[in-house]
Length: 243
View 1 (cartoon, rainbow, N blue to C red):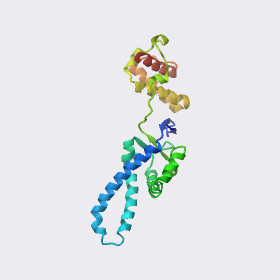
View 2: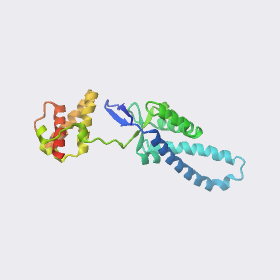
View 3: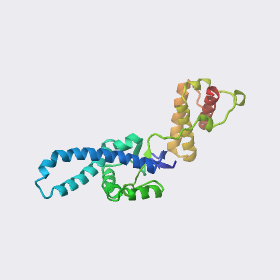
View 4: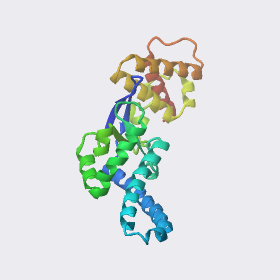
C-alpha cells in the first residue's frame, strides 16, 4: 500500500492511497471489454456501407482510435475522473496539485492512452506505473495526475489508535460519546493527525470546527482550552465505553 499527500487549493492536505498496478490493469481490462463490444456493434451496423470502399479498413482503424480516445475522455469528464472500469474497482483520477482536473487534462490522458496502453500493448503503462513514485503512466505525468483509491482496503481499528485495557486505566469524561460510531472517531483521529503533521491555518480551522461540532452534539457549553487534548479525550472515552 502506497499513499500520497495532496494539498488542495484551500491549503488542506489530504492523504490518498494510490491505485496499484494490478487494480489499474483490471480497470483497463473492463474498459477495453466495453470498448470492444460497443465498437464491434457499431461496425457491424456500418459494415454494409464500408464494404464497397477500398478504404474501409482504414476508416474502421481510424474510427476505432477516435472511439477509443472518446470513450476515456467522455467518461472521465462526465463521471468526474472515473470510467466504468475505474468505478467498478473504486478508483479515481486526481490532480497532484490539488486542483480539479480539467477537460484538457482528461483529453491529454485519453490521447496518451493510445501510446501507453494501445500501441505498446500496455507494456509502457505497466513499466511507468510500477516504477514511478506516484504510479503515473505517461499520460498522467504530462497531465499532472494519478489514480487513487476511492474506497480503501486498509481498515484501522480504534484499538490500534490507542491502547486502553480497562476502565481502571482511564476515567471517562464524556460518557455521551458512546452515541458516535467508530467511523466518527477515526475521522477525529485523522483531523488530529493532519493538524499535527501540517499545523497551518487551514488545518487549525478544521480542528476548531470539529471541536465545535462535537460540543454541539455532546451538549457542552464551555469550550475546552486545549482542542487537541479534548478530541483525544473523546477518542479515549469512546474506546473505553465500547470495548
